[in-house]
Amino acid sequence: MHALIHYLNEQLPAMTALLTRIVAAESFSADKTGVDDVGRLIAHELRARGADVTIFPQTQTGDHVLGVFNRGAGSPIAMILHMDTVHPRGSFAARYKIEDGKMYGPGVFDMKASHVIALYAVQALQALGQMPNREIRMLFTSDEEIGSFTSADLIMAQAHDAALMMIMEPALSDGRLKSSRRGVGNFTVVAHGRASHAGGGHERGINAIQEMAHHVLAIQSLTDYQRGIATTVSMIAGGIAHNVVPDRCEIHVDARANTQADAEWITERIHSLQPVLPGARLEIAGKFERPPMECNAERLAIFERMKAIVAPIMTLAHGPSGAGSDAAFTAPIAPTMDGLGAVGDGLHATDEHVVLASLVERAAMNALIVKEW
Ligand SMILES: [Zn+2]
Image (cartoon, rainbow, N blue to C red):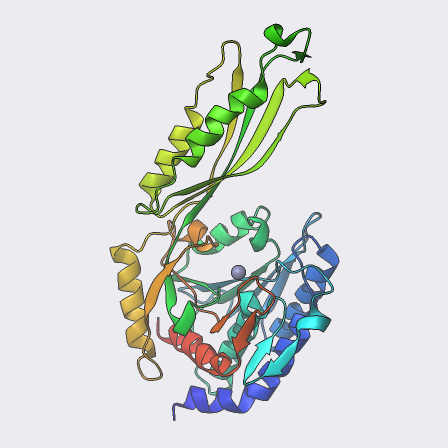
């Protein structure tokens, strides 16, 4: 048996216990107190393993936590992790259980198991005297599930001099790495018309909802599953009273694309919408906050190298993910791979769980990559 697997197998009870503590510290994105509880726990675990820890205080979200091993050594590798979850406080008690070798709980798969995997990857290298002479950074952010608005700059700052960016999101089913990510765009369109009485002044009004109806249909029709494009008018608001021609209507648009070219195409189409009703006016804002990460030749080369590195312990595969992640920020800057976290299922769902044995395999996998890259 490989020495890393042997060591980590012995650590599995401790890994399971730590994972339980991190999952018990519930950390819904909007719950700063909860996310900061996880941050303190993580900072403690990082320091216990000899990391140099920096806290980046935030006012609206939880604080970000950066742990650095071997500061100043060359060829940095950065692991990107998030501490927030999509599960409001109060989910833990009802959902936490260990059954058939799986741990269930809010955020256990996305991505608290990844915290344990990263920490124990380094611990294993230290215990076996195999820590590479390179800087290893672990950035734990607080707002990935709501768009990484306060952490994106910090994430990109890690990429500028990095030899490798390891995005520690959960794996695809069967442990496949995530070699491509769909881009995520958010747009708002506001239609301005003219208010008037719905009876006596109907002909003087310009109905903003009527105006918007044209654009709702136009935006929805950009969807093309063959191309991997999905546009969703996801929210709409307009009007102030039942007898008033509305002078304002606003929609929110969620847009997804597999390629940068399609992301630009969607953006261009939405921004070039023109008013249909005489006298109406449109106000359009938004962009692809998370650009697509394409599975290009560079990504395939990164995958092949990882596959060769971990060949002594496992056979690695890769595939596409339909959702966005922080990989979108780093892929244009540094070699990036995603999906290095645990094996499990039920992402964002009530039956979210991880396969506990995968903690060992994935920690060993990450350790090997960090050591040999
Ligand atoms: Zn995640």
